Image (tube, rainbow, N blue to C red):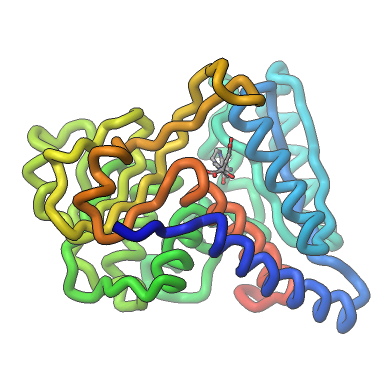
Amino acid sequence: MQLLDGKYVSEKLKGEIAQQAADYLAASGRKPHLVAVLVGHDGGSETYVASKIKNCENVGFKSTLVRYEDTVTEDELLKKVEELNADADIDGIIVQLPLPKHIDPEKVTERIDYRKDVDGFHPINLGRMQRNLPSFIPATPYGITLMLKEYGIETAGKHCVVVGRSNIVGSPMSILMARNTTPGNCTVTICHSRTPDIKKFTLDADILIVAIGKKNFITADMVKDGVVVIDVGMNRETSTLTKSGFKLYGDVDFEGVAPKSSWITPVPGGVGLMTIIGLLKNTLVSAKKEVYK
Ligand SMILES: Nc1nc(=O)c2c([nH]1)NC[C@@H]1CN(c3ccc(C(=O)N[C@@H](CCC(=O)O)C(=O)O)cc3)C=[N+]21
């Protein structure tokens, strides 16, 4: 078993991004600028947004946090998005999900200018990605592809099983792994809550990507020897064992599954850290107008 080490890869790539941000600053006199919009006080979201802001500072980006109470109306939020769209000093906009239930996330996502949609959630970016055209690729799937590349994991011709079909991870990940790109060229199976016998499919996976949001969902009896395991789970539980009062669990029973794996991502220290890299890279290429003019 070898570890796909998100800490190592993310630090390495952050060094490269910081260099490119410095070059961009020297050439243009400005820094790439990311705006994060956070609604409410969800513990996970607060942590992740704080981490995004901190990482922006670390690589020499400008970042702005826009906060709202969870009483904000959908109209107010949409107006803010339009204001951010129109601001020429902003390269990337993310609205942290989930949103309170009186706000339609689809509406907010579609209101963000696709040229600033560094989350890659806008239907235009999704469609362009599927067609292999320049686009913003959703940060988590993007981060996973960077990780697979970094370790030279062979994917062509392999059976990739994606567990979960969310708009943020499972669905775009399945598109990327089926595309004629590296990584990619897989035969892809998507499993979800209505798949009667998930084990039947996971047992055949050469590459198993799990984004379902259930602690220890994948156990040793569900994988074959030599599998590559990507654990996207971010299950936060209160704990007296950590300083923060929380402990993070993946969707994979690491202890059981790791001995059967050729490669596996830990949680924490795996995909989460790569997600931030995906976001930073999207923000940088947005500033440099390398995806859209
Ligand atoms: N519009 C939007 N865009 C997102 O990209 C988005 C979102 N909404 N909503 C929630 C998810 C979750 N997410 C994570 C980012 C970083 C870590 C991360 O850095 N994790 C670290 C540790 C975190 C910890 O210890 O709490 C790790 O896995 O090692 C995790 C999860 C982005 N998301």
